[in-house]
Structures are given as structure tokens and as C-alpha cells.
Length: 114
Image (cartoon, rainbow, N blue to C red; front, side):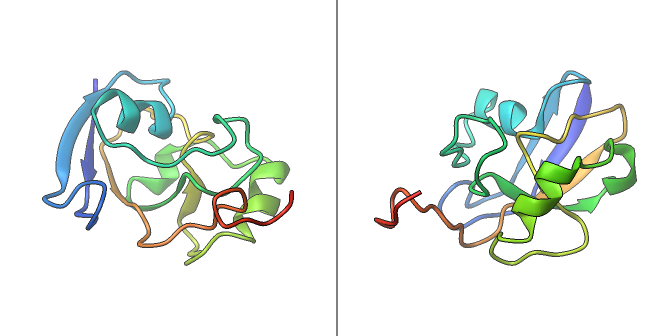
């Protein structure tokens, strides 16, 4: 099991959290399985940016992002060099510290056409 420290997020995880997930699990699935309801509007198909997270510690233990993920991340709110789409980032054995950005861009809930 890999430890993930989730920094406090006003709505999703006000006190922060420490969770354990099996290696090979996506960050998104790990969060959801532990009651942290991160948005994932495209149902984890790498077609939006709603599950964007910033990996504050342990970033280099994650596999490299593929080109499709990189292209989508360019559209994410609050993009940083350690940003990943949590549906695409698979946990290894290195502990992680992640931050869920304060805002997300959800074209569907904001009334935009795809």
C-alpha cells in the first residue's frame, strides 16, 4: 500500500486526509475509494481536466504523462509543473502529497458545449 497525503481542500477534504492505496491504482480511483469525491466529468477517460491535481511530493515516482494528458493539462485551472490528471497518474510505492486545486473547469456543468 502507498500512502497519499491529501492537503486540505475547502469542499472535498476540509481537514486533509491520509489514505493508503494499492500500487497501480490511479490517484482518482484512490481518492474516490477513500471518500474524497474528486470531480471526474469524463468518467476517467482522459477527456477533461476536472480531476486535475498537483503532486507536491513524490511526483517523479509517477509514470510520465502521455501527450493527450499533457495537451489537456494545458487547459487546466492553476496548472503547475507538477500537475497531473488524477485519472491517468498511477501510484507506485513512493508516498505522495497531493493538492486538489481550489477550482476546476467543467464545461458540462458550466453550460458550455463540448
